[in-house]
Length: 112
Length: 111
Image (cartoon, rainbow over all chains, first blue to last red; front, top):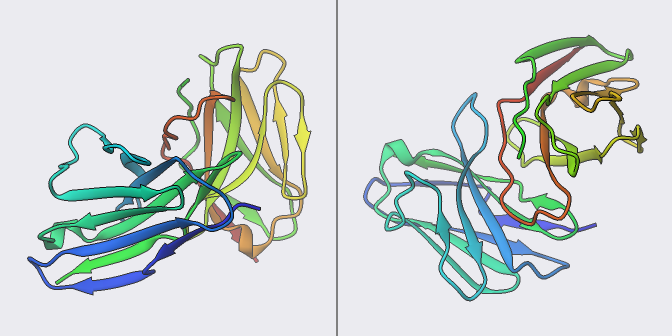
């Protein structure tokens, strides 16, 4: 079946630095990928829709200049958290659509 | 996509059937019922989906009422590894847009 690889699985960074998270579709092409954020004991919250070759579509309230999304190929989308702060600490999950929706294993970001 | 309502939590004894309900009273005729689950600190996993007939696969069964206003996900013999948050989502089959998650049901399988 379809597999989505997300890297890294966890990362710790200092406040003020930037962190890049990669999401790859391993055995299929994904023109559209989705990025979610999940805080402890809460549901997944959609942040943005990543479209290959065009600008991402951000959900209301998500800062596009802080969460940079690049979808340069049909198998790779990246999320860069810029100037990270402790409140950005969260579990970030990507998803790609093949026949259904396949999710990555998530990235635990801790900003110290 | 139609709104869904699920109980926040449920317990189930290991080896017994787990029955997870979902209400979707505003479902449209062309909307399917999807179920996903999320095991702690992992990405969500697809379980099953259906339109109006009952469906079964290797993971679970989906029972949809005749009026389609509610459904039940059945895990026939729950194991400790089935402990997870289960999400019921209603949407059009060909909708390639975003997938929105509600609060889901936290299923705790106990020994």
